[in-house]
Amino acid sequence: MPTKIEPTTGTITIHLLHFAMNRELLGCAEEQMTLPAGSAVADAWTLLVARAPRLAKGSRSQMVAVNSRYATLDQSLQDGDELAFIPPVSGG
Amino acid sequence: MVYVKITEEVISANALASRVRSDADGAIVSFEGVVRDNNAGKGVSYLEYEAYAEMAEREMAVIGSEAMRVYGATNVAIVHRVGRLEIGEVSIAIAVAAPHRREAFAACAYTIDAVKERVPVWKKEQYADGGQWLGSQAEDKGKPALPALRTEC
Image 1 (cartoon, chains in turn green, orange):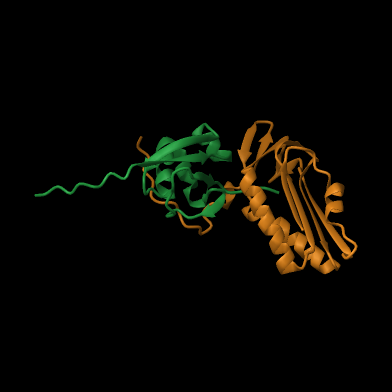
Image 2 (tube, chains in turn brown, purple; image 1 turned 90 degrees about the vertical axis):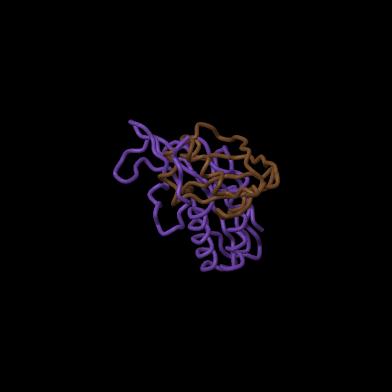
């Protein structure tokens, strides 16, 4: 049987910002994350939850921003993007 | 005109109102959000505010534009403070100018509601025995869940 070989597509590095309860659970305000090219917002979230499982409790209520604009989980990430998960806001 | 700012400085609501004033407008409505000493039956010592400043200013500018377009405001100014705020200090000030009072009241009410709903700012209540981020009580209100999550390392 021939083995299918996936083409090498490389990696991307994104800049993550953590706020409020996310920052406290992850222990830092910002970091770099390297992901396979073609990764989406949801992939970054999965990696963060693997590191800080208590983040999972708030999964349903988080929003997300890419380059400081609200985005969706299936949005694909580009090298150099700034990504921030937004826990429930409480300004005012 | 829309003016927005995230700041660590003390907010002057009077200075903000003077930013929106114009000879063509007959009404200015101002709103101040003030740190109070209690919430949900619990004594609050002080608040810590945190913002995603760049995004917060962008979202506040969008909200100000909506208040003009939808509610007829002429000028909107929004300033939100971050850092440690003591009881009685102003956390947010909004000033709205419009030709008449009804537009000004409506635009100001819309602006504070929209800020609380979608501007990335967070507050942590500090009590005598610890602290808690607010907003988590909004969980599970029918928003789509993030995907099933693995917890192994």
